[in-house]
Image 1: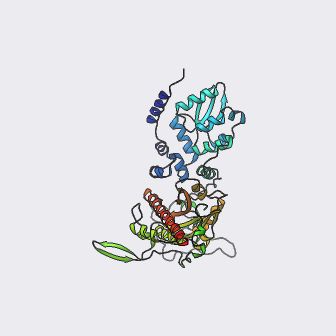
Image 2 (image 1 turned 135 degrees about the horizontal axis):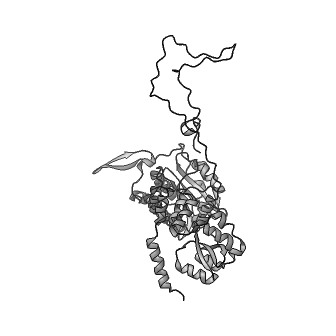
Image 3 (image 1 turned 90 degrees about the vertical axis):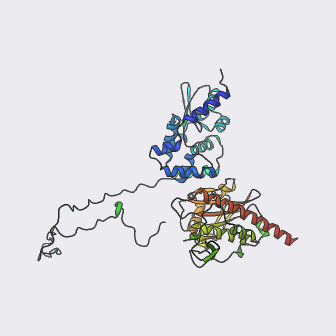
Length: 459
């Protein structure tokens, strides 16, 4: 007798109600810190996606740890990508492509009377019931991170992934650098037994004898040699080393040659701004840009007014960059064109503005900009090490561990991008994401107004 869809849905809801959360399981297993889970949950409302995917994008947890936690959560087997990406063709043929894509399901094993299927939702009884009807065999559910399920669906059934999961899969498949072998620290000297000071007239250590080549014994009070390695068993670093549009026709606006010349200082400073020092009292300050960062998640009224007062594209982008550098450690503005994305300007420590303006990322190659152009709200995470990102990272002064890229859209068409990096170790907060979203909205309104103004002048 077929089970009622209402009963199946109720059963799925009951199972989910009593199922432990994935973040709790990862923290309990020691795979991730509680702080990392809370931070991923804080941005989940902005970025979307499941908690496991967010933690993988941040690099906070390993792929196997997520898979094992999913297996514990759902009480089934974890299938790694090495097995999911090497399924024999007869096994793949056991499930028609239509049902595999609809339910995000990939068969991995066929046995006597059963089929083991990797599922995105292994606890959904309705899906299990439908797969049983299609295959005629008992379904044994298994799990894998959703990024690998989508990768398998593209490989075996031709279902194209979104750029977000394509970039994450490429990151996870990258070879891992060999672990550094840390030498044990030498044992600390024993200060429990007092060492007598040198007696007057005691002989000092001397060089080896020219005749015998032997070195006299070193007195017990002589200072021992320094360890050949630094703290943690690693050699000390050398001194001085550092860590290493298609949308709007811009022909209606001033060309790229009208951009302001780069500032001579690599660390731009904010212009003097009025800051409230007390009731009815104002003072002027010229502190570095990020020292005057707004604390709220909304641009100030002055920043909105400055943005809307701009009369051309360069004025809008210049106002956007000034607002960004007041809040973020490093920032940049990129312009979307018909053939790709080009750098406009940037600000922050070690940012090479001339090199940034030479950056060109075509739409025909994978990039974070292509991911946003296809409809994602914004990008948050490490800059993916793609070939077209190398020049971008060099212009920004190094590969960022976390960055935010917010598109500027006019009538659903992407015309530019705001780039930002936070100074603190905590990275971007929900307030930072809100700030970038509102700033991009103000920039879009100002750009649309400048286009209308330009058309009026032409008419």
